[in-house]
Amino acid sequence: MHFQLTEEHLMIQKAARDFVVSECLPGVIERDEHQKFPKEQILKLAELGFMGMMVDPAYGGSGMDTVSYVLAMEEISKIDASVSVCMSVNNSLVCWGLEAYGNEEQKQKYLAPLAQGRKDGDLYIGAFLLSEPEAGSDATSQRTMAEDKGDHYLLNGTKNWITNGNSASVYLVMAQTDAAKGSRGINTFIVEKKWPGVSVGAKENKLGIRGSDTHSVMFQDVQVPKENRIGEDGFGFTFAMKTLAGGRIGIASQALGIASGAYELSVKYAKERKAFGKEIAQHQAIQFKLADMATRIEAARLLCMRAAWEKDNKMDYALSSSMAKVFASETAMWAAVEAVQIHGGYGYVKEYHVERLMRDAKITQIYEGTSEVQRIVISRAILK
Image (cartoon, rainbow, N blue to C red; front, side, top):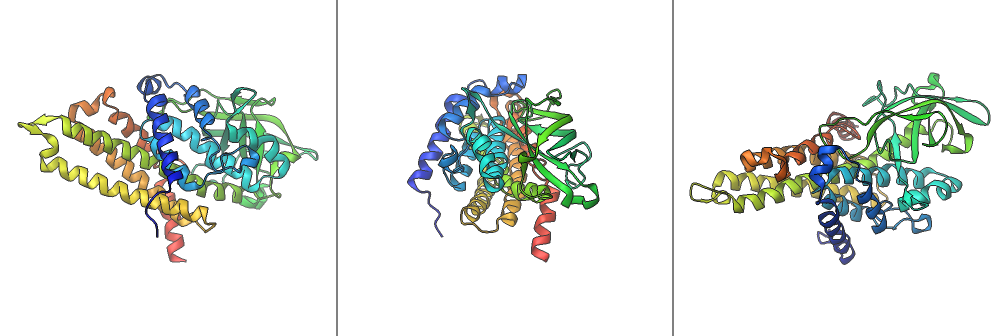
């Protein structure tokens, strides 16, 4: 067992840290306040190769390992979780799903520009469309239908809570093609936002990650070519579940970053703020809070790294990714609340950042599988 990062990993970590401090920290409060999508920041991430980190260079990616991805996600999430979730969806769900299960034609046409994060000089990212008004945790209850018309499918339905919903150029859409088959009747389709019949709803006014683009996406008689189906007929639900297992590593890393950011701000503030004649860091009540934060964050980090290591070593990482996701997300929520408490009244105002981290933390317990769903996955694995 090795607990030290390689030189390459340290370089990637530093690059992510330098990027987020110089490019994301300025204006992060204003972007949150006005729900502004961080397009400029995402384009600069693409220049660093961070929008297709794990994609083979043959398809325009950076060819990095999952450990590198975890390191970059943590650093960026310390300051701007709206940027990191856009990066996570494009990397973990869209690019990974296409590279793992797409055919060569699909990879050449879609994966290459998605991995680079741009096409024809403009932003080019993807979105993962699984959730619906009646299909959240119960992903088998798909109401979006794709009717087989011979040489194409006719797509109709609505998807909810879609990250990158308006800014994406490409959607991976899960839809039911044969309701009688249940989950075995679900397929995944590559749909272009510009196609006739695709429309995007208003941006959701969210508690946290307010800069990220969260929308409903509607399909009305959208013609999807047969060649845009991923995998064999009926593979869609398996595609979604296998892709989400990797996506949970990304969200666990985001949660880890939020917790780490809250902790680092708390340590800094505790050394500056004085009460009863000395820095509050000298008071045992604050020391114990910081000790608990540091311990839980390190435990979350090790869980994230284990899941990433298992993925890189072609092992079954479904259990470890669920463990990492549930523990890191609950650590993020707890640590952010503690950070606000340590900051006192200052923690309740925007300029000290921790109130935003507290709001951002909550979603990590919900999207890409709620904490309750993760516990179902974990309990099934340990009891089988």
